[in-house]
Image (cartoon, rainbow over all chains, first blue to last red; front, top):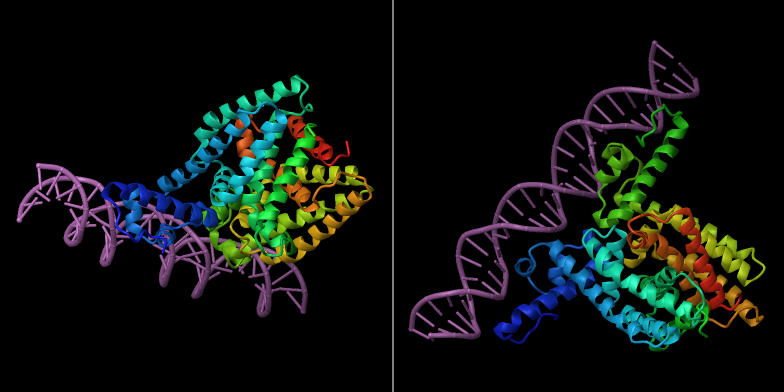
Length: 210
Length: 210
DNA sequence: GCTTCACCTGACCATATGGTCAGGAATGGA
DNA sequence: TCCATTCCTGACCATATGGTCAGGTGAAGC
């Protein structure tokens, strides 16, 4: 049912099939972990024969690597919300909004990333040491400047960033626990808004801009 | 080297061997996930033959279940810091201290728990629905009372609890990422203190008790 | 119509893994 | 000393899994 039914133009096949496989893989890796995921499961989820997966992705690790990169790209893109901001309230508020929205829309990707990092980042260590480190240092400088200009409370920028990541991603990574504590029901639109508002209020007050 | 060298009294053998195996299992499950962990790896880590593991723990899942329960017990115990408190600043501050200390001392257990929940809590779902739910509701009521008494800002108690869990456990679950961003070096005593202080300051100010 | 080439896949293989078991060793009480 | 019980383990097995490959199919270009 997830497989495309209508015939595909020759040129589009590769792109569409890869996207289909990546989507299935993201879900399976998130639900079972790298070790627990099987190519067969991913294939079934995508509605394709297992051998077809190996046609597009040489190995399980290649497929996994691509999934991890995807979520990282999404997060990096969200980081833009912080850059264009005039001040801490606006910048950090927008960043929280963006990260919470990603937690809601891409919970699988978030879990795959969390799992990858928890296991010592075997396949994206270089990303951590280059892209993520640069991004973090840049953002920490921006926050430090805001502090020095007296526009927010004096907090360690690093730990503030960790708190932003932890809090927003928690709604994806621990979504099952939250759902269980919510009577077994997924958060409604209203509850997601409450969550977002709660996080924003707490943190913005925490850095003294409310 | 991890195996006990000196002869053990008959009565102590079972207890000591189980503890040894559980310790090794916790580490391996944390580093590889349930699916990626192998009984052979755990056996090697414990310095015992694989068959010996099966003598004490019938199946891989039994062993895993025990590991998950252990960390949950530790967390429950830490919850006491919140109960005996007179007010929000003291109670939540102590809870953060306790949780941060656990993140430092039991990073493996925290990761195993995180992994379990991320994968839909296949083996501890009943814990979530009973013990954890009860605990959460009790604590939420305490927080709500503090709010009603005007002793802290008006925030959704649930989301405050999620933030406490997310932020403190982040230092264990994403310890590798934090270490990488710290120049590849583990946090020093001083840095752990800074982390703890940062988290406490941010949250306590966030709930309006600073 | 013919050729090319990307796309597809059933069948197969080598390996790794969870788990079993028969037999052995050590301990401690009678 | 003897016996019962617990502890221990090398060897083995059934199964699952990542990956391969030879052969097939059909659309696009000429």
